[in-house]
Amino acid sequence: MNIVILCYHRIGGSGVVAYEIGRAMAEERGHNVHFMGLEPPFRLKEDDSSNMKFHKVQVKEYPVFDYQPYDLALASQLSIIIKRFCIDVIHSHYALPHAVSALLARDISGKKNVRCVTTLHGTDITVVGAHPGMMDITRYAIEKSDVATAVSSSLVRDSERVLGITPGKIVPVYNFINPRFFNPSLKPIDCDNGKNKIVILHLSNLRSVKRPLDVIKIFHGIHKAMQGRQPVELRVVGEGPLQYEMMAEVEKLGLESHVQFLGVRSNIGGVMACCQLLLLPSQQESFGLAALEAMACGVPVVASRVGGLPEVIEDGRSGVLFTVGNTDEAAEKAVKLLKDRELYDSVRQAGIETALEKFSMDKIVDQYEALYKGDSH
Ligand code: GMT
Image 1 (cartoon, protein in one colour):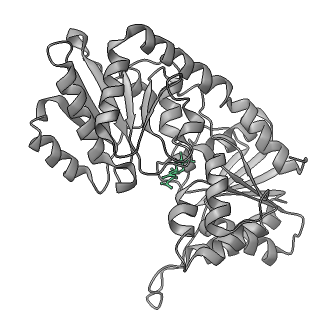
Image 2: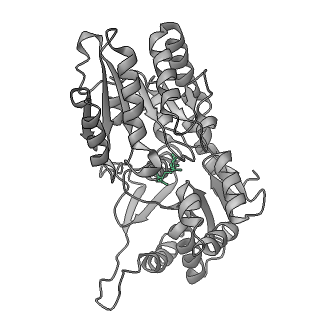
């Protein structure tokens, strides 16, 4: 098949998953894959398989425009790509604007047989799509797609509830990780776990939806409980609007020598390889790819019981869940895990197995391939 993948190139779960689907389709299944966007997905490399291409969307800068019409440029240029490369499938990640641009491009090209597949990732429904001014176009994009998928059953339900989508229209297809980048045997980077130090990780874009200040509060609770027993350190990976509030909270609680802000890192697996716990206290998370990445690396996750996280983590077996905002509960559960070696090892092992089995890359790519081909689902 000739496949176009539309995704956001910035570091973030949706771009990672979109790239990995494209890579697997091209490298492992022999399809031709065309990524389109403003920049290539960040994992796409020049020496990647020759049946993977990137087409940059060229947006006309013109002073009359208050903003540059990216979505229209994408639709227009995608219609050219559809004809030039005999495209069979357009897979749009994130409803807006990609799914709308895809439908428009198909119409412009006149190629009615092109299959439009749309994958919903989360805030495209819960934030962007939930805005009254955006609801109708988001619903339109989903209903008119030949196939719509969401990354968890929770997001399927949210989409039906928020947008009134026809039940059964959206099918759940889970996210997955590439085991080459996330596994329990990766070479650790920045490891100075001298004196048996416990390293706790938080990884996000530090926006309010991730509740990054809760990370500091939870860590404070763990630090107090572990005093005199084992040194603990928090590593924060990523950057975003709340990073300075986090630093202020660290200072207020006198934790400066126990918290490191590492900024954006590309080798996340390597960072995870020297961590013992991941904290993910998000307000909302349709899936929580970072949780799955950590589980695959053998790092147990302490996460809020929201959105799709209970589908990724089975509470008490393959990780730990707590009530969103209850930082005391989170710290208590984290400490229990860290103090009980047997429990810790069994949670760690169950996380590794879950990542490989329930979220197997091959199984999930099979599901997408069947949807691309129009096999019944
Ligand atoms: O919507 C966002 O916050 C960004 C988006 C992304 O592009 O990474 O995250 C969403 O999609 C991820 C990949 O499917 C999920 O793992 C995240 O849980 C989801 N974020 C939210 O629901 C807040």
